[in-house]
Image (cartoon, rainbow, N blue to C red; front, side, top):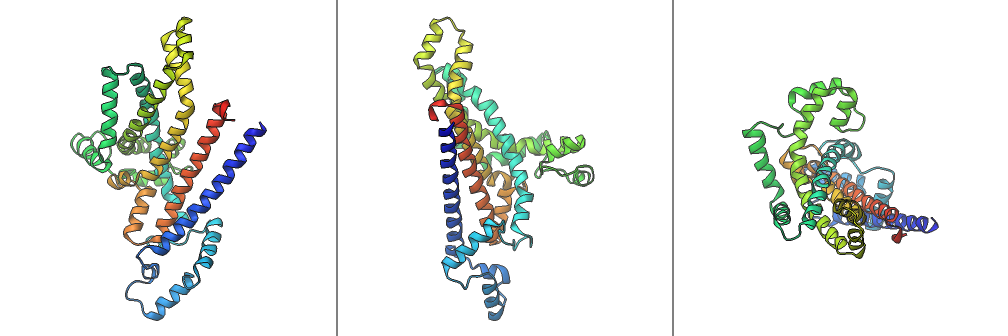
Length: 341
């Protein structure tokens, strides 16, 4: 247990150091991009006096070290500045947009795990035969197809032509008013909040909008997870303990799905956590194609509007989530595998 606590303290220090580095990098990005943040605030028709006053109010007249200390202090206190695009604090915008991204990435990760892990196991068991070849081709397609192209084709086919799913956005316009009056916001997830409120018509409509972008994003997740699962399983199935279990008469199903997969899950936990983090930060194109009002779409719109407070705030949050999930996966790895303690 003391070694585990020492490992936790080391990971905490690593987390703080990485977050500090992330803050420093985002600060530098804001200062080196060829866009004047003052003009983004006052506009290109402002007088020189207005420009100078805005520059002073933003603290850009101070030396860079002083600016970084102020930036660090603001972030630590939860102040990410005000968005020029929405005229609201960036923290409020992120708190409003992030649950949509979290909902989408979580369902996509569940699809990736529930389909990708069994597919990887089946591919390893039937190595070189047609099930393995089929799974590898499906995974290769998942890596090869651009997400925006697949999203557009999916929208055209399943929404535009067949009408099986809802279109862009999180709800139909006719259900937005029902959501406002019938659903009590608790988590920010429309599915969870509508289920808690018993608004099952809103739940069904939200699910019809969520399922297509989640499947598109989940396809890329399962392609990665199935490939890594197959690799881990091939390594485990070649171990001596598997041969011993088979010699002792243990059923093949138990050897594969209990013993081998149980050991393969140790490194697979890290793969799933990193895949989840990648979906949280990499869903920009998916959210743009499906007009999904999440953090990715928010950052994209802010970038086109040269709203760097919003861009850097969103980037900082995504980076922090990625780092935290990475640290948590290390902790889970330590708990699952006694050899890592």
